[in-house]
Length: 265
Ligand SMILES: Nc1ncnc2c1ncn2[C@@H]1O[C@H](COP(=O)(O)OP(=O)(O)OP(=O)(O)O)[C@@H](O)[C@H]1O
Image (cartoon, rainbow, N blue to C red; front, side, top):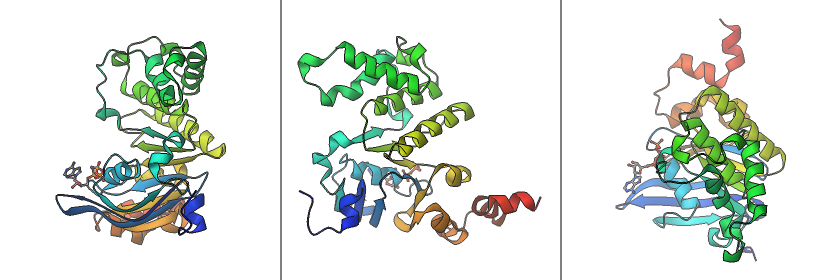
């Protein structure tokens, strides 16, 4: 049962982080962060290099134990909820030279749901092929993963998360190093998942696309600068605070009020 001490918002939330501090060698790289993702939302974690974005994700996923504070997935500890969470790591964190076919990598997303005698069944292959079709990669099913382009690799990773049919999907920089067409394709898939009521949380670096891709945002620079709906939180003052005043007034105007910047040309 969910912890009765926690508020209703935390119990209903796909991911609720309270007072989270992550430290390496006694140095906090994430400090006292509170953050709640609303159900059926697409949220971005934004912040400069070294702001603690990946460390926060690792804490949320139970990958690092160097933390204090509380992380709850639908009101429960992550360990009890792993079936409900899919994770798409950074593409460059994986050895793509490992000999494996695309279809096998995608089907691996199903393994935690299966008993050993169910491995290799035709049902799994069908589910993996459906996921590959959703990201436009069914023609590559038999290819070795080492023969794919960066954008194709990212689509395969997304397909691997899709077969899990998770309620919460966490993605670490899903658009890093992909071309515009692949980025658009990935965004469409993510938005369709959100429209099905699923929740997505992405580490994201491109400030220019925050407004069109996401509905909620966490601005992070070791500490939480602000969090909430993009319309309320993605403001000039909050961006300056997050990036330590390193964005020029022109950059800020374009990011915060793109329509106004367009008209002023
Ligand atoms: N395993 C580790 N041991 C020691 N320090 C670490 C470790 N992992 C990360 N750090 C440090 O923690 C800080 C936050 O790193 P993190 O990777 O979480 O930031 P980030 O916001 O994801 O950065 P980027 O945008 O560059 O990916 C950095 O100063 C980094 O050097």
